[in-house]
Length: 194
Ligand code: GAR
Figure 1: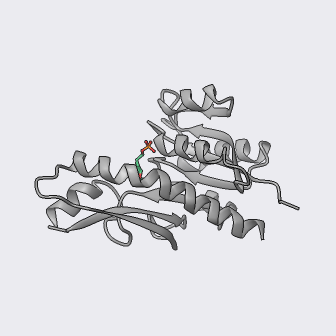
Figure 2: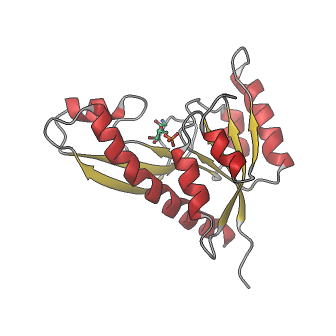
Figure 3: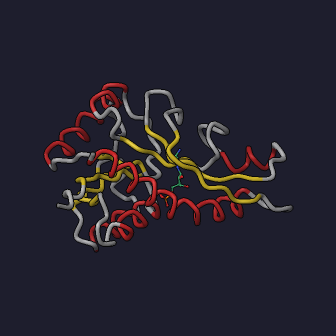
């Protein structure tokens, strides 16, 4: 018998194009994850509209003025209420507290716009261009307490072309992110299903 798809939440902070790609990919027959909840730390995050149009439950609240652990406890409560089993960070631009990460250990994935372990943190594309690299890309990894540091599940590469701006490179990488994340999340969900 085919196991039930894992109940999955996606955390976003803005545009949400990776979240949309994950949702669209989950329409495929036999997809081992299902996006049940989209959470944002910004009520104005543009990606929320896509989730709502698709009939996916959303939760959004600004983290401003709240301690990290306090905000993450709210997230945790929503995730538990929805029976979530797997979390995908998709442009979620806020560090998670160690308590939250421990609670969801081995069940949080992130997509990062660089070929990890290169260029953890911000401004990845400009840093790759400034270093004179010939290639860039994106990585999906398991989230651990150290920023952008957990085990890498999969990566996709793109060339850096002469004259590329950070925006040119970001667009080329983003086009790869969508497919990479959907594949990596599905593969990871299958391993959790056992
Ligand atoms: C993506 O490029 C993602 O890799 C990056 O933010 C963008 C979000 O786009 N994430 C990070 O930089 C995390 N450190 P999206 O909202 O359209 O998915």
